[in-house]
Length: 239
Image 1 (cartoon, rainbow, N blue to C red):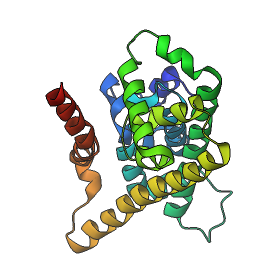
Image 2: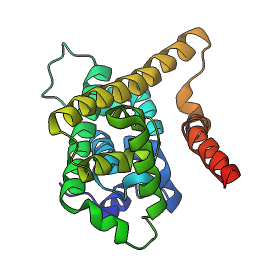
Image 3: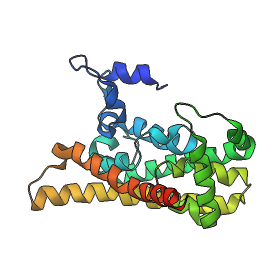
């Protein structure tokens, strides 16, 4: 099934008025249905791939999407009927997301190795800013191979670091090692955090986090972007 914005819009229930702001809401993708069939898991996997595999994917929800995937793990795993019942829903979702992240990084590395240098001559556009590429290069040069791991937890940077690794022709085996480690850490930490915190708040405090999704998303955005904001402030002071 091919997904595009038209498909996403058509998938919204007819009695709901579609708003473009929904495209930036992780819950919108997770709970999405098409002709009555839940397709949330496929949207999540595509977004995870696009954020790291497509250099324009940095505007898509990342960390908050994974956290909410843990909260909605049962709903997301429902379409995956071919998975044995011995595996928990949250484990299945986390593994699927990790695999999508690994493939996304591989695609980013391949793009960087084959065509990445052309990005330095590309003009800024709506979805591409050269400064993001340059900042990611500095980040990669500072941390070396470990940048692949660190970048997973940093919005924007995680989109471009695999491309930089491809541009400098980082050894493939080394890249894959960091790629697998970072993808598993990123996926399992955020998905399981969402899953266990949802259960904790529901059982201990009788608070349903699904009723506070907007607050959760805003909080996660603030937390994940804080390091980037501080870095930008320090860079401005130094200049």
